[in-house]
Length: 173
Image (tube, rainbow, N blue to C red; front, side):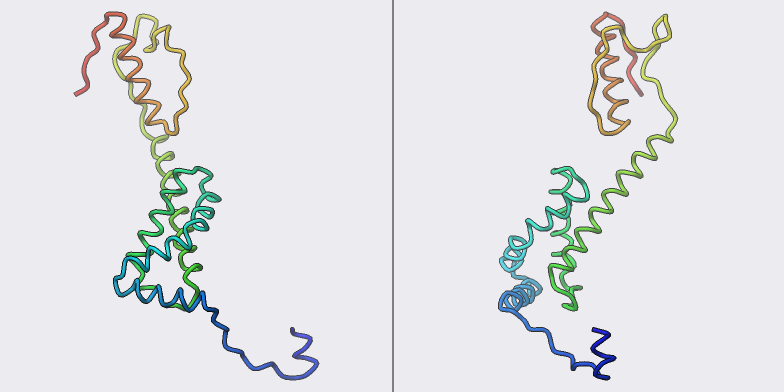
């Protein structure tokens, strides 16, 4: 393009974008949804659902998280639809909403994992004579996502093992 400008010395006139029937239909749906018609927004959701889910899956790589992001994205889009100005296509705006939701989920998970790591370690119950709070039968591997869950499962398993051995476990206050 720059070589053509140098060669001919002037730029071509700006051509207004051609609006396809799908875009015109989408702008009518957006206007209807802004006026409060729920069916119009349902049609928009149906059109963009697969792409938003695919984008969310690229960020999270977990189906349930991606579905949550998709749902939250459409909720935010519905709530903030009045802020959509039409300077970009609706799909671009909705994609940005979904990306922001995915990034917020990642930050939330990172912050939760970081704050859990910094908490002081607590013990659950008394230690046995060897100094180990676990019983000998506790050698299960749990697939846990956070240390909070691991601590809770450990405390429950320890208490169950103590009860099974006939030891009394003090209740937490």
